[in-house]
Image (tube, rainbow, N blue to C red):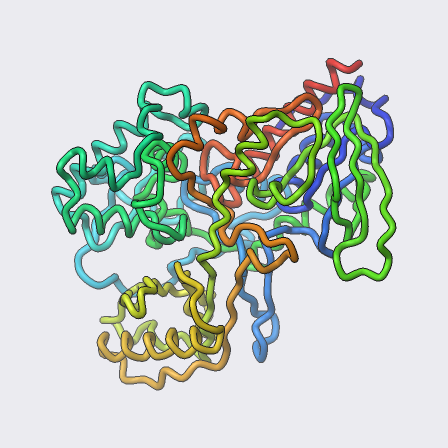
Length: 502
């Protein structure tokens, strides 16, 4: 938490305008209020009619009170920032506000092992609530081979040199000139086993493969989101769920800052941001589709763009640096990747089928790498399998049919002699949520040449204009925890700038 600054009580109306009422923007407002910035001098602009951004619940038809989360969902075992914020807002694991993702499940297929991020054996800490400094200890299955672990340890050592603060300044910055695959080839390591191992690591979070990713960016990402922790097993980045859905977190943040007098402009789109020496002027208007097309302006001492970098690139700016313009131009607008949910009457894959895997086996069908995981709550009613498509080919109906047939095949292979007919299907593609497009994943990789030429503009304020959003986080980039980190940072920057303005 930031220190209280009583002298900021004289802040002017619209001293701070925040673009985006997702977790990053709401956290920024929350920390500003805690720091002594008067709520009525803070305005949040949101293009939708609700807060939360990409942290959003979706009701499951036919099951009252049940939901899926179509965006950010989990609290990982080392994601202490979001865990601490949730507790600040009155949520507690002891009060039943969270449940463990892997509730009452049988062991996965094949042997598993608990490993640190560096691939060393460790003792599991079942049920440990995330706290700062808590080391990772994640169940991994199947256990990586000796060659895979040796490669992982080498990459972890390189990643430690790159770090998360300014990888473009590291001694390994030259690796921004090659892809991960090209680096493997140069080291004589580009065989099927090791290429497949790294492709599997990046497929889900980045919706791509190692032939496209800058080696420098990969090392940064390994530091930010350690690959063994970024797994769908106990102790990983998906350890805990919000009982009321992850949307509960932004709801509580919104309620808190609203009580402090923070103003919200709903269904409002930012058309232009003019970053000037004396302040920031924002031209805003109704969200696309509204009959009212009138524009208005907001003047602020400081502004925070609390959006994913790919989505922030949709906006029009003046007064930003050439490096920031380059970052917007070069940001990968990846159109692949969606999150899906298959709904069943019950979680039929759970005990008494004790031979059932924790994750239904993955299959490679029609070039789509499929991973299913148990998304059901403690009751198992409804049963929900969720996962990610790394490709968006075909129609939703075609994808639904493919996924449902794959589950039936997998359940039969696992010896579950049960009907596998599903009763519902949902999917979410975030790049379709705005008329002008955007990124499908909040985590977008960087190809060679971007990090060293434009990376310094990623988080750095430009005069009175500041940047937040989960992908600007140093740790757990792309997760809710990263959004909280970015909001904390942006608020600190703004408070320091407001004090200089006095």
